[in-house]
Length: 607
Image (cartoon, rainbow, N blue to C red; front, side, top):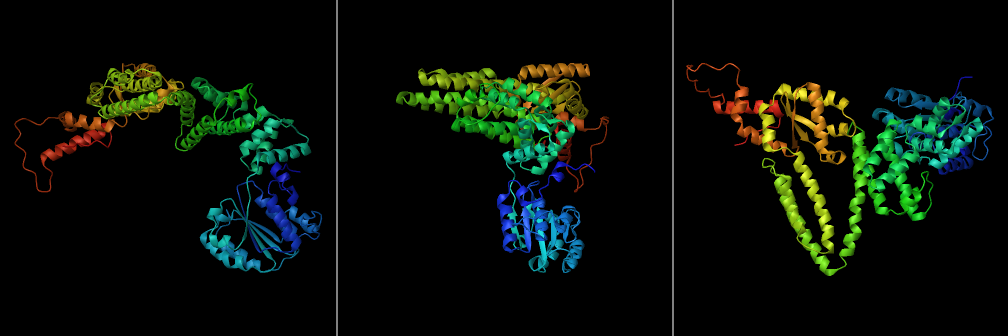
């Protein structure tokens, strides 16, 4: 006999065999016992939750010759024929491949024929939401008033796509996802019947990957049995499913709680090398963080890493909520990027640094209990606000580059007062000073930017982009390879390049100065030339580009003119015709065209 997949071999044959849908199965059995069977049913729910199985059991019970308390006997000729798919009065139709109006009309023409062997003709239409609008319209009248011996069972995974006119003509049953415990119990039963040894942790991994779908869980279990027929082991489950080991995830969460960014990045990198995906790691972090938060409230939970329970018991629920929110944001970012590791790494760095920020809270709270210190804090807050506005105003004038010393002098004003509250404010000022100084150091001056722009060419920019996309990623290691995605060439010559800094997040991942030194060394090695690298903030670039175009109009006009100069004795040009642009406007158009060619389509010349 040919091999049958587990989900087919162990498909439920009675309502009692269906796991986790007791409310639905009890209702269907009672309708059979009382003889109150509706003419149309709609089974809706996620994949692998038992919709088709319940439809087949219900169809078999409707035609069973020896019904037993709402359950099919599975012994009469009709039940045996239904199990083998040979019951002529049970018609299964896949709407995904039979969705035209002609096929539905053909089905409706046969509805009026009486059943041949059973009491009812049962039509099971799977994935009914795939029917066309015309097919739905053809089905409406018959679905509302079918012959007395016909029952329709419609099944769908996308209820929102089924017209309301169809839903209102049926009894709707919403199938829910299976709990992990229910799936583990079902797999334990099946493996016990099959005589296969298993590890409890392996079944928990399968249940987590299946995401509430019993068919998915049995398919993964089938895959593991093909991998190793004698047993189902935890290590094999991790390898086949691509999930990170729970021990690693627990260590990763501890690293985040302890503020150890490097440890968290190393653990994530190791998990990815072992086959886990960024999405799986984030999902497991969320799941474990929720368990840890519940453990701090209830004291109930099972963990694998030593002293994990003692470590998390010292954390506040707000800390866990922060990590969960950040991980959910990172999961959302995964949908919009092909570089799946970037959102994960940014999350790990940000989540591990939250601990430092949260430590200042108790200090400020204790200081605020003193009225005198309260007044000092209010004054300090006003000063910080004023200095922050000054820094922002300076940052909005990129052409007048400001030095780290200037920012330091602004922040130095915060150190003029004494007292217990000022220590807290000084710590905040130092962090602000470091961040602003770091931003000033990695942003090039106007002269450096203009030096690159004055020599920029279109072939130079194309070659720089080729180096960024093709050659440099293979030479860099993480996290430098990740940082490369935040810096993109926007103007270049054969030995100089201007990079646009698209985000400040990369400054948290690596040391900017060391990264730029490494980048320059790799560029020099690739091209056998000495390169100059300048950096401009993405938000400041449009204004810098506009100022450069206005100040260097003659240079751009010369580049836009033909290579051969016209003779000096050439006659004066004739005045333009009425439908021609004046020479000055034509020259400006040439400047804009050349600027767009060198720096992109947003360059504009304004008087």
